Image (cartoon, rainbow, N blue to C red):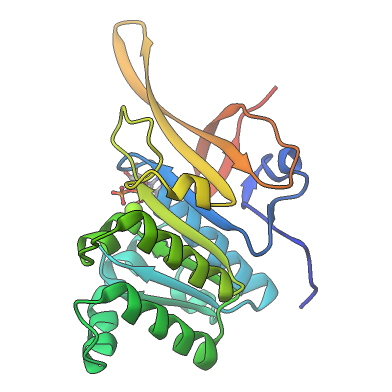
Amino acid sequence: MSVDARVSTRVAGLDERLDGGIPRGHIVLVAGPPGSLKSTFAYRILYQEAKERGAASLYLSMEQSRASLAAQMASLGMSPDGAKGVHIIDVRSLRREIEDLREQPQWLLGLRRQLGRYKEEIGCDLLAIDSLDALYALTPMENPRNEVFHFFEELRELNATTFLVSEMGRDSVRMAHHGVEEFLADTIVHLRMREIDIGMSTSVRRYIGVVKMRGVDHDLDYYPLIVEGGAFEIVSE
Ligand SMILES: Nc1ncnc2c1ncn2[C@@H]1O[C@H](COP(=O)(O)OP(=O)(O)OP(=O)(O)O)[C@@H](O)[C@H]1O
Ligand SMILES: [Mg+2]
């Protein structure tokens, strides 16, 4: 495995606008409204890195079951059997592991420890947590700003390229629930959906924008995002 400094977004046309892709080791917030392809975007990156580079990837699915996510991704041409290194862990199995340790309801603490164990056992070059909001729902926090800060610090210690999926309301300008995540993240990928009037009808179009990327001179444009046969592509002049 070469030590390439960048992780491809797997979106045709986008990497060249980011100086080659996402800097390895970044914590990436993937924010967008329902159906904006957050899960698919994150999974594709983990999947392709596992398939082409032999990377070990952990996909923590806090909402969708493993079976449902695997079936959805298989319908997009990414069968889990096709990439040995990609491990989907859903909340049921996570709960089992963490309950064993009698750490509930201290979910964040339990999760940190469990992530350390996964890293030792199966490796963790890339990590996705889908979604932050679902994780928060399991975690009563007295001082969210502080606890989220520490959680990010611990994620950094894993030295993985990490994708944190964040659910946004359709008209929200906030990229994540507590507001601090957008300052703590190294990169923010915003998946947007906008209504467009075409003649008598209205259609919804998808857009992708990188609104923050530490250490990279990137542009701030939003590009139309086209998905065809499981491949992603941006439209740009
Ligand atoms: N085979 C397919 N080809 C193209 N697009 C698809 C295909 N299957 C699903 N989609 C689109 O993908 C969307 C779901 O993508 P995804 O689950 O990644 O979104 P999400 O942002 O994670 O959604 P949520 O907020 O519900 O978790 C569907 O709403 C549909 O528009
Ligand atoms: Mg999703």
